Image (cartoon, rainbow, N blue to C red; front, side, top):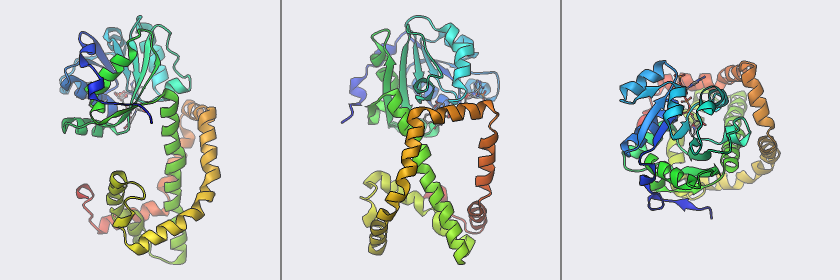
Length: 331
Ligand code: NDP
């Protein structure tokens, strides 16, 4: 069993007298800055001078250029899009790294694939929430917290774990339990979910639509049945609470038998594709592909998105949602 850390394992006083620099004020950045401040931590926000700068100022933060924030911060949290981090690191952070500072990431991609190579005189840590930024904030405000993976890659000071646990406590992560992991494990699991699990789900809905519409079912009825009804919201809530199979008794017995008896025929079908995705992730070939896509100006990425949005299922979803008014936020 992986080690799990709770509030009792972390000492917030470790951060007394230290400044945490939150670089980036987007999804995670805003949530982190607000949670840390509410936990009594000294925070400065670092950003380029645009819309997010104004937002951070409006929230009452001292906002600095990325260089200045990196210079004054003892703990530097890189809460920027993963593909932007290496450039910002090279141009604004690296030159401001004094001995004993700590670099903190919310996802391990840049370190796992060597896109950022910190010097050996700093600590390098990971506090990776399994929750979108708005959820990190909302749960904290409710007195709860988001679950997270924690890891230390480099412990120059000998105090990296103490600092990381204090940070995780201030963010609310240790309220519910934060799992000890590694940059490699966190990154590879996250990419695998995105590249081997989600594609199976997306492909299943697209192929289902194609087969059912070819057979003559109405596009709007298919879209309502597959996705638009909102039934999946409730179902996945129960999956999270009761477990993938534990929630099955909430369905009719016909449904339970149908699901269980037909799952096996799909297991073999998806195995090779899943293993291929895992190999691409572990060998670094996906990361090389993604870096080259960025350098080329996201041409393929944009085309893939355009094609996906043009799938007839997306059009049918929009049509049925226009007619059948479902209160998704209340589900
Ligand atoms: P966002 O896309 O929300 O980050 C936006 C911030 O990055 C803004 O402050 C923006 O500033 C700044 N930014 C964007 N481009 C640049 C640039 N070229 N130069 C300087 N600043 C830039 O990021 P997320 O919060 O989604 O992700 C941050 C980290 O958290 C990532 O490592 C991600 O993997 C991880 N993470 C994210 C989760 C999520 O829910 N989104 C969940 C768990 C982890 P401006 O626009 O003003 O330039």
